[in-house]
Length: 294
Image 1: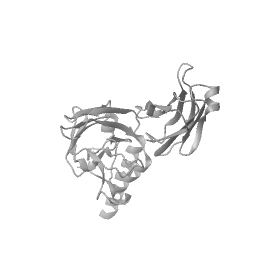
Image 2: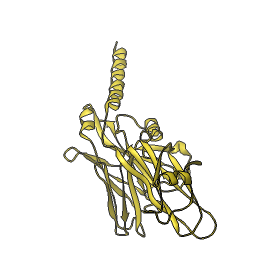
Image 3: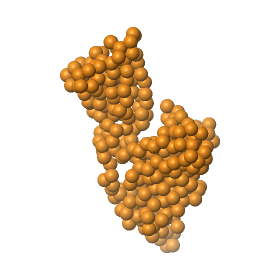
Image 4: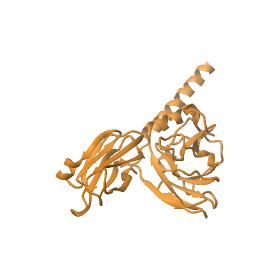
């Protein structure tokens, strides 16, 4: 009888976790620019091709490629091809019909943007990718003296003096990608916020520990049973040359939830950054607000 009782208690606990995660709803998504605007110049002479990469912010948003040739009828490139992941989306015909031109696109977690320009030198196009219904992005420059990048309503990331030898652009974004959810579910358990915080430092990794301050919505706090407490989790790729199998979430560091400010504070080692997740080899750390049993 006691074993049957424990079985039903376990089932009820599991159901409560599923219901918590299923009923969490946040309306903080908005329309954001996830790439650009970036200008591509047509120099004199032969055709030129540019290639860039960008990351998806969410799989649930609606993405749009926006291209403008020149400005105010001047400096327009006559022959244009803009492709996403090898598929041409906008060309010269589109820009002759509408300038700027925009089209809804399908994207992957990591995407390749290719721009080919032909014709007279001295002209240019401007390209950006927009997402309707995505989480926001914030970018700041961290000097050798240190600094903070704040994603309003979500998180602040602070680097100490000496974390970067030279001024470095750092991007903080909130995303909701299925592969991250899958990794979290494999190596962690319990309710979590439906988005993760990504910290990207480009091609330069910090060389010192850094602080994160994560906002926790009232609705998430209110949804938790009394036997859960809020913690931060970081996705750790260890050892550095290990395959994806070793890219797991860990709470093996001190994180503190403040019920007054409704924030989680954590200090993370620079080992939280890795350049092995993306094709462009940029350094990234991923943080999630989750829970543990008390």
